[in-house]
Image (tube, rainbow, N blue to C red):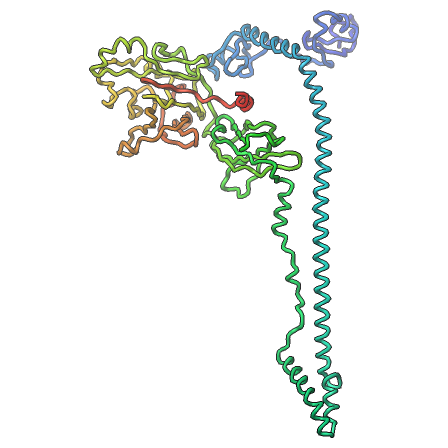
Length: 575
């Protein structure tokens, strides 16, 4: 019933979701007059189920959302920040987020309004393109029909010629066999040759008999020999007239797909990469866009399935970003170009491997233990570089007596509490010494406060006693789990299972290195991210929140692998 009618109340016809009340037609007009703010309220049919005006946390039903997580881009409550999944994320006040997002949305709307003429021009251009596409498609259909009609005429002519040749051969063979049959018919008694011979035998005149019997004897001998070695005058089979169309079938099968006018596109393995998504890029040998559209196909390599089903994507550009791929899997990719009703052959198949776990995104932390005198971060906090600070310059005199610099540590700004995660990075080839791995939250303080005497021989690199030594993870006092990189080499830590020969523990440094942390199993693996091949794996204590950790010494630089975005291919092409 209407909530505002005088008794008796009328039956309601609308319910205002903003006022949380129901109205009849007359009361709705009175309380929501035109030209006022209430006229913009949202109304529905009569209902008693009104939405709450206060937004509550979906994870903590009794708590209001009063903060905004910048990492997850969603509202959260204070419990989410204190002990939930947003504990280590950057958050801001709801008013600040409201102001920021409102400014961004207003700018976006203003930009769209300012581009109204441009949008209309594009719409006009698209209308013309639609009509042009219709005309071109009809023309392509007509050309394709004419081509197939020509082929039909050729096939009809070939068919007629083949049938005529078979018919002529049949008539000739029938004629030969008929004549042979007549000859053998003459060998029968009272017919032909036998009858004539019997009449000759009745001749009593010796001279006449000899003259006639001589030639008759020769004919009878030939007939006798033919009986001994009977052979039909013609073959009954027509095997020499069988049409072999295997090659023609193969050519016709590819007839609508192959053309010399289209070059085969080739997938560029250097520009293509697999990370959180797959970026597949291809180029034409002639560097010309001869194709109107491309078709990219891919399938998962599975030993159990003999015949894989290709998934098809139509692409108008020369690259494509593919998501929703399974972790720790191999995929085959191929591409072909289309122009009208014809297309090029398939490119060579390229196989790429997905990471062993979902990609974990983070930035370098510029607050926790960051040494700005020795380390330099780029503005986006995706690259860190070690540089010589004043302490190193002031200690240059002591360097003449065997002074060594210390490792400068830096961690990621986001931690991992559970699950399996993967991240990748590049280490510059000129880097002298870099250590990479993970560190626990309950050991971060120990990591950064474990300072070393710059002149102490204990931390001399060749002594084997530096804090980042290769067997450090076996010592429970060590605050981290790291492996050593440097001088374009990857060093496998000294373990009981590792080869005793030092040379066999040194591997070439991959162009891109990956780390896979499995908190549930307590293991961390180090991967060649280009081939997704595990180089080394060890156990790690995951009792606390785990953070990506890095350490640099001397000239060195580390760059985090950028995630593949939906616009990555477009931006890459613009560059």
